[in-house]
Amino acid sequence: MTGIPVRIAGQGGRQATVSSVGALVTSPWAYDETVFNELAESDTAYSFYKPRVEEQLVLTGIYAVADKQVSGSVSASVVIYETTSIDSTTVSKVLLQTAMVQDQIQLFAPLNILVKEGAFVNAKTTDDDVHMTITGYFLPAVGHHHHRFAAGIGG
Image (cartoon, rainbow, N blue to C red; front, side):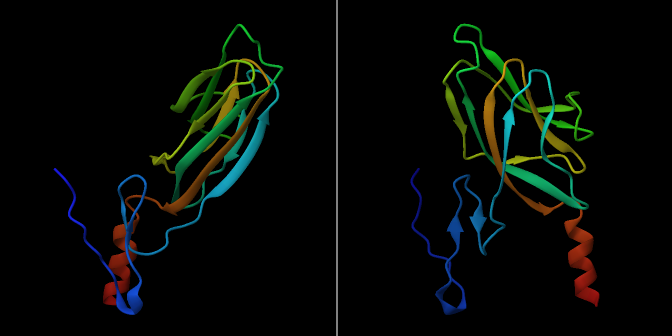
């Protein structure tokens, strides 16, 4: 089945688009924030994003480089995860787990991963150093939409 070319435009000719993950975008959504950390110590928590009140993070990309310090023969396990505090190595939920060897580059994008409200996004590795950048944007927490819009209707 093929798509039918359709153009959705508002007054002034502003056109809706379809995102890389198939979402219809009718206005600019938030631009990505970007956080870099060097995972310089094994089995250590590196925090990328702190939770925001009534907001949730959407991860859009993960970029990782294993440098010369990483073993050429034994893979480094790398985990990006939800957790309860900025320095916690305890994994509440795995967002992405991979294995990397020396001089390897990995790119995971486009992603569209919704992080649990109130969760920190941390990463850790079993072999240093892994240079990592995680991109994403915050949106109103799922479930908080309804009362915000309803409050605006009645005044």
